Length: 383
Image (cartoon, rainbow, N blue to C red; front, side, top):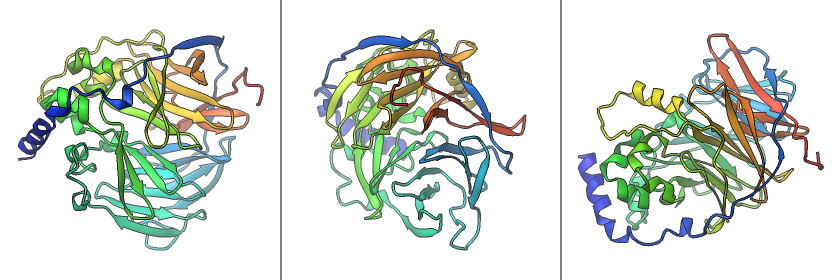
């Protein structure tokens, strides 16, 4: 039933497919002034803690953090890797959580954290990590759900793949990736999906409801042999303090900047170095998930975007694939490429605590340890 319903919806939208997508109206303005070609990257071992190794991580204010998605625990670390404290955990007290299992999370502006589960419940905690509020969102209850573009996604929770969920906070709003689950509808009607699918959703914490759907459609590069990009159809994004969005698609060499109303401001970027882009064609529902994962992890794609307001540097991480011993990191300032360097495998840029830039935490279950990478940017005078 779902497949038939979605197919009919997509067909109803067909009349708008040929319109120019305003999200990609600007031509690329690619400028490179490379000043850094290598970095000295340190490995930072975090203090040992009980963990399931199913984690989210990041950088917030003056500390590093790890959220254990199964244990529902928040670990905060000093920039040196020393454990600062432990927050939350499963329970019914104000300093605990009933989320069940964390599906997505992000630190909130002004302090605190938001946790969500796969059932559509959201739990918010204040700057002291005490329970503040929880609410449930039913997307099907929206009065405006039948608007042309938004009707493609009757329930964004279904269309969000939990292991790849990406959350950002700005003001009293939360933004997260939203996309086709397992690539099914990408295959069902590829052209319509590339034209009309939403990639970012807004959650209004004050109203306890979904807000806007953003990032409709895909850049032109996806229209060339689109079924070779089935497994690389996600995007990564960050939001600057002024509300601008920085967006990068996994299989697209360009980057896109938008204002907070999602009007395009710029298009820029260069392809990463030595990336294996020999994507295989995936056009069947019957291909096993393990094979999909193996294909995805063996190829090159862009996998993280981080804008650092303090220094004005924009970072884009990428996997090289093809058996490469390193991954890559691009650095832009005002849309100009100033560095493209090798970084250790698994490096994805996460944030900044002066004077270091930090990667996301890498879970090593076999070695029973958590670690991350850090470096100093050599050519940023404000540091």
